[in-house]
Length: 191
Image (cartoon, rainbow, N blue to C red; front, top):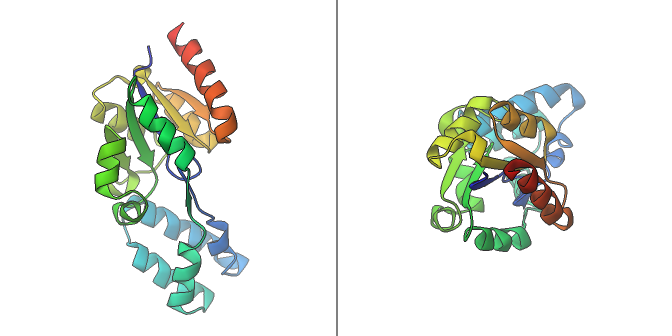
């Protein structure tokens, strides 16, 4: 029986456009940008370090890179409101590839404490999705076995990582289809 719903942040509860960062640099630097993104997600470097490094790779001023990195971020308020309702029936978790500093700007600790029973950020545990261990950490923080958790992410490989850890999972595409996908996953897991 599913007793917890675990949400990814980016692409589910919050949208950004990392492609804008890649557009700042020449294609020969894409691998370096990818490594910087992963280092930031793991908490190995700060957001300021990330912006400084992208500035150096792109030849653009730090303030321009910061403006681009910070622009066009939107919270999925409709889904956040739905989470408030779902808390009546389920434990709610958030599992995201992000460092603590960046998360604080999106969901301050006070709000995270209000919305989620447990939060796991890759930057705080030093690993990123789809490593199956990060999902196990999430389940332990919820005091549940992985088999009682349903994970929601927009990236199929992250959903596969959750399945490898023993969780039921769904790929999030949009708010419109979420209720149907959630209902189907819950019926399948609880039958």
